[in-house]
Length: 214
Image 1 (cartoon, helix red, strand yellow):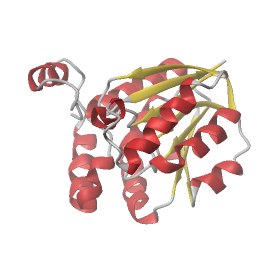
Image 2 (cartoon, helix red, strand yellow; image 1 turned 90 degrees about the vertical axis):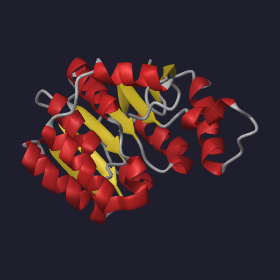
Image 3 (tube, rainbow, N blue to C red; image 1 turned 90 degrees about the horizontal axis):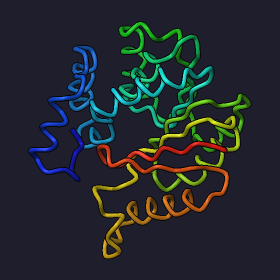
Image 4 (spheres, rainbow, N blue to C red; image 1 turned 30 degrees about the vertical axis):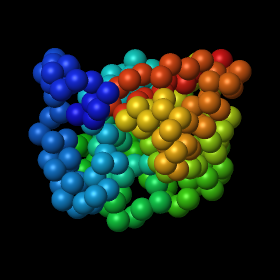
């Protein structure tokens, strides 16, 4: 689990009292680590996957969007929660999403997912559907741009979930000036000052911010 903000004992307790991923997701996580090497940390944690499935079931979106698909773990979790809706995935890597495509088929959700490859600032700009639910987990420097494209297309009452918004807690320490931490800190400030939305930053994994549009 990505539980850097918790003591090891609390992190283990949370793990032991949360629904575990099924064998397919466990296998995907292992293969992703072997396939992507140092980039494997980009994958969400099992507790985040359970959360995404549950929130999708609650929201019952007709149109869900994911920006940053990687090897497919989060998209499977979202797609499994759909009840007749569709998930639109935006990513720039054909290499990494090739694994996602294979696991979508194995998970039986490929008929619920549409993948668009290319820079998401461009592909999202061409997306003309009203969004009910969005998950943002892509390059952090472009979070503000992705955010505006998603919120401007989101229905009132829609939900955007942004990942990695705590950066292992570094965002709360001004002495941490690593570029990605600074970018996330700026994004967090942008969101909380946006009068169009209500915001809740959850200390789950590396931070997940829930943003609902008024």
